[in-house]
Length: 195
Image (tube, one colour):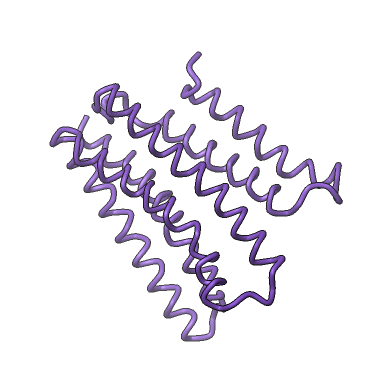
C-alpha cells in the first residue's frame, strides 16, 4: 500500500492528532502547547489530505510523474522549513522581550520566505500542467479565494457591528490556511465536473 493511500494517510492523521492530544495529558510538564498544537494540526492536515485523496477522481490530476515529484519535493522542503523557522521565531519572540522593534519585526517575519517558496512551487506546478488541469486549478483557486474574501468581509461587518471580537492578528494569520482548505474542497467539486 502506497504512503499516499487514503487509509495510510488517515492512520497518520489519527496517530498525529492522538499524540498531540494525549502526550500533554501523560507528560504535562514536558510537552509544550506549541508541539501539541503542531501535532494536532498535522493530524488535521493529513486527515483532510486523506479525504481529498479518497474523494478526488483518478483523472483529476493528469500531471506527469516527474512534475508531481518536483512539486512534492518543493512543497515538502518549503513546509518543513516553515515549521522549523516558525518554531524558532516563536521561541525567540517569547524568550527575548527587550529586542529592538526592527529586529523583532524581522524575527516575526522569518516564516514568510518559506511560504513564498511554497507559493512558488504551486505557481510552477500550475504553469507546467496541461490546459485542462490549468483550468481546473484556476477555477478551484478562484472559488476558494472568492469564498474566503466573502467570509472575511462578513467577519469584518460582524466585527464592526460588535457582534464578534476577533483579534486582527488571529484573523490575518488564518487567511492563507483557510484559502488552502477551501481550494482543496473546490478542487474536488470542479474536478468532478470535468470527468
